Image (cartoon, rainbow, N blue to C red):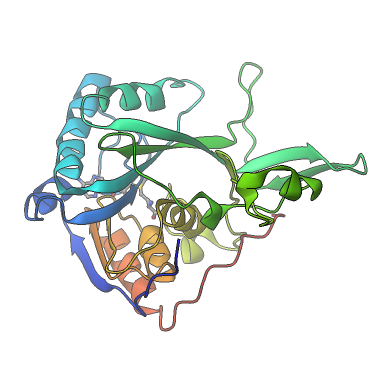
Length: 286
Ligand SMILES: C[S@@+](CC[C@H](N)C(=O)[O-])C[C@H]1O[C@@H](n2cnc3c(N)ncnc32)[C@H](O)[C@@H]1O
């Protein structure tokens, strides 16, 4: 894919208020990429939003915003939906994915890995990422969330190599003709993206349930960066998707956030982006 003429900074549209109401004012088929993480209905203390509805009520509410996303998403657009579970609610992400089945095709399922232990080629066991242990004899500590990649028809071409990785065994470059001699292969659907290490949550990440900007950035690059790209996040939080949109040269970013404190924080973060640069890979170790 040829490099598009990217914008130095998006036209920002960060709105305080309900996203369902807000999205009603957007034009049909006007958004290239939606990257978002709604409340998971796991009783998180969000300040304004009550995250503890009955499951049926929650899923009905999801219908209301998902219908708006379907309407505003361009025919070739991508909708990346980040959602996690809890040990006591392991099926929630799948229930939501099934619920959205009449509206979208599930084109890809990505696993966002927050913490992992691997054995290196030297045989050393290495742990990386942010591990938040739970005290339980029943449940494993949950180290991942889902990113469901929905599209209208399941046939949106992607820029897989934009988020690709080098071959571990270089002999594969010549062995497989589809490489075209390039040392880059598809990354696959396990994405290890740790949170940035912070000293003070209150000061540096004042929100109980965020995703790293690098996660949204990888989604945007996978969809394929293009000129005049419009990115939407109906559940903006403190603005990590907005930062990713700027990094990726989006022309326009629209975000909605119900809570005035988070909205103000997102606006501050966006204002601080004077000269967005291409995001570096997050470091491996916490
Ligand atoms: C999981 S958080 C998103 C966090 C965000 N991805 C980040 O990294 O900062 C969900 C957010 O949706 C907001 N929210 C809940 N209901 C909303 C609604 N109807 N319209 C807009 N925002 C809403 C909550 O206040 C919360 O900040």
